Amino acid sequence: MAELRPSVAPGPAAPPAPGPSAPPAFASLFPPGLHAIYGECRRLYPDQPNPLQVTAIVKYWLGGPDPLDYVSMYRNMGSPSANIPEHWHYISFGLSDLYGDSRVHEFTGTDGPSGFGFELTFRLKRETGESAPPTWPAELMQGLARYVFQSGPCQPYSCRRQHREENTFCSGDHVSWHSPLDNSESRIQHMLLTEDPQMQPVQTPFGVVTFLQIVGVCTEELHSAQQWNGQGILELLRTVPVAGGPWLITDMRRGETIFEIDPHLQERVDKGIETDGSNLSGVSAKCAWDDLSRPPEDDEDSRSICIGTQPRRLSGKDTEQIRETLRRGLEINSKPVLPPINTQRQNGLTHDRPPMSGSLLCEAGT
Image (cartoon, rainbow, N blue to C red):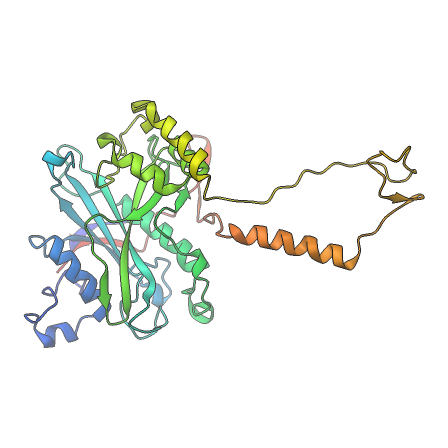
């Protein structure tokens, strides 16, 4: 359960922007990685020094369930002349190394990625009359962060330094969620990931941090991304203002797919598949059973692997070749599906959804 209240504990919204003018004594009290990311937020939102935040009351490194220490929520005025509507901008703190003392992430040097190397962002269209940002996107971001932490190098305690970087997120990735992102009746039930259009990469004392933006999509758009590629569908979404526009803003009230809005876009997908193929791959097998207890009827019999009344056994070399082929095929697309985090029943249907965590606090930054 979350509540709105002024913050009483230090959060990432308090300090001045980093730079020569920042008081050294004040900066020294603030985690350096957090300070660096906050500086980028201040660059983008200089008039919002104290944004609302969703805060993990019990931090992940203290045994809490939520990997993100904070999610800051800003009001972005957009650009009406460029068909960019006013919206809420959510920015996470915790997938990168905020502290540099190995409480969560192993320090690997300043030239490489900080922690997982990225933070998540999300842009949600502001509804008319809405005076405060909804908090459900922060819960969504916590769910994605749990997936990364549970399957990547920063698992808690003794396992957290076992690097498995293939399970982090990249631009163009898709996430099959199979449920409305805001737990409503919306058609927006899945996600694509792309670079945030405004947030610049940040060099922190613990490495580089980039910003990956979550983009809500319909089932048909997800399927097209799976058949073609995520970047191609993201480019199409940018061309349709009501479906995202240049900044790929998610509108949970969108009732039509981009293919229903502009049927010609399906032709571009089909052409893309024809010219580019798909960036997904897999291994499949077709099996059939036959009676091997009797000899083959002739030389063309499909059961001609029988010798007398006994089936021919595979040699050790054959077995190893089959295993190696399957292993290589499976490794091509080894990123696992998001694990079920919590099962929640609603309207007679069972959905795998991130829990409505009781350890989140929505607060104003100090």
